Image (cartoon, rainbow, N blue to C red; front, side, top):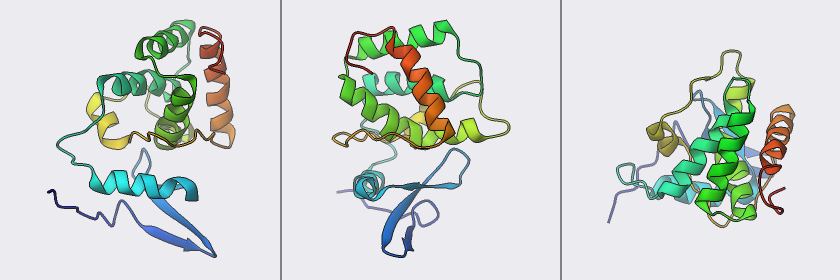
Length: 168
C-alpha cells in the first residue's frame, strides 16, 4: 500500500461563495481552476498516482505528444495537421475519447503556453508530459473558453478534415 502525500503548494482548495474549485498547476507553476464536475476525479487521480510508476499507456502518450503540437508557440503547418490526424487514427481512440483527451487532459495544462509572451516552441519531453498531464478516463469532453480555446477549435477543425466523419 502506497503512502499518499498531500502537496499543499500544488493542490489547494478555494472557496468562492458557494462554488468549490480545485486548482492544478499550469505550465509555468501558476494555478488554473478545474470546474466543479471535474475536480474530484482530478484530485483522486493526482493524489493517488505513484510518481515512479505512471499508468499511462503508449497510445495515450503518443496522443498527448501529437495534440501538444497544437499548443506550441509556432505556426502550425499542413504537415503538423497531417501528423496529428495520423496519430489519431493509429491510436484507435474513438471521437469522444479524443475530444476528452484534447479538452480534459491536454488543454487545461498546455493552454497557458499560447497566452505566454515567450511560450514553448520546441515541444515538451515525454517525461514532462507524463508528469503534468493526467488521463481522465470517463469524463465528459468539455470545451475550454476564450480566445485560446477558439484557436484550438480552429486548429482541431483542420485536423478533422483529414479524419473520417465523426471527429468534429
